[in-house]
Length: 342
Ligand SMILES: CC1=C(CCC(=O)O)c2cc3nc(cc4[nH]c(cc5[nH]c(cc1n2)c(C)c5CCC(=O)O)c(CCC(=O)O)c4C)C(CCC(=O)O)=C3C
Ligand SMILES: [Fe+2]
Image (cartoon, rainbow, N blue to C red; front, top):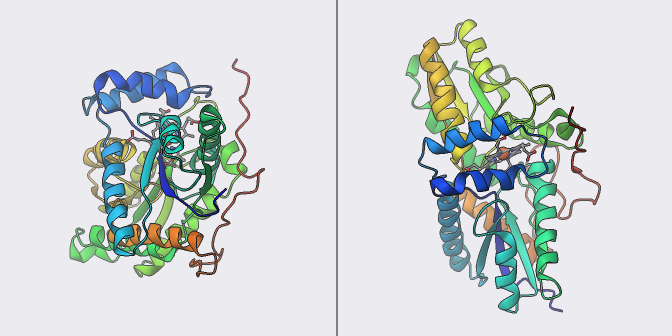
């Protein structure tokens, strides 16, 4: 079998694009999970605000178009395939397409930059399951490393943070607090991964690159799911905003550093919910953009592809941890045990 990559596979979360897809999508996301039905119905309401359309698939299409151009500019002639974990185009169908095209080996770019079950292991498991569905003809899939500390990821985020700070009135620009947010996960999932450590490191690097001192920023969490009695990462962004306000803040920058595009968790949980809290208490909130198709971010993906094509190329990383491994050890960020429901 060939040891050269014959395609790039973009793997993402997936999202519904019309109203009747919302519930089946949510059922896919939550299959086998300890999440009450009420939570599912509540989140269905978030999607209903947007007529069942999540922007995440279009954001993937834009990312693929930008990456395709970037690869062409650098004479990397690899077709890009795309499959999602939870909604069409489904990963297993894409895997079949690649098999049908005679592709034997692919390099996967997963739209998540941090470790942990949700952001890393679960994608690996889903890729493996899709391969099993296709059987013998399925291509071998390698995954691009985690990139939370890649200099170009840090640089793209730093540009977006600077742009957000520029919208804060000049008198307060140099003092206003910054709330970096990431998806809350169960404490048990956090305990078995470097999710929090990697997020903290990226926050620190981005803040440093913008000349923001450590006292001004905090990492907080959003989009908590699960059962109320199970511990999840805290504080929640909405509680944090109230605390900041109580401490005298008039301005805040909210930056969803834990996400890679302005998808539903960002446009609902921040632009609607968190912004609603700010309006209520009288705090001016500026929401910084996620990297999306920022040219530096697209360049980063291209570099991460190049380093796998040529094993002698430099693996860039900044900060204290060095480049993440190409292949996660089999026991890293394990699937959380499902607790018995009482
Ligand atoms: C760490 C993490 C990321 C970042 C890494 C990555 O990007 O993968 C992420 C991304 C996303 N999460 C998303 C949406 C949802 N996440 C849910 C539920 C959950 N997320 C979790 C964690 C994460 N999620 C967890 C621990 C759960 C509980 C259920 C479980 O243990 O798996 C649910 C179910 C309803 C609810 O309970 O909220 C939905 C609808 C969308 C798509 C948005 C769109 O449609 O535009 C994206 C990109
Ligand atoms: Fe999620």
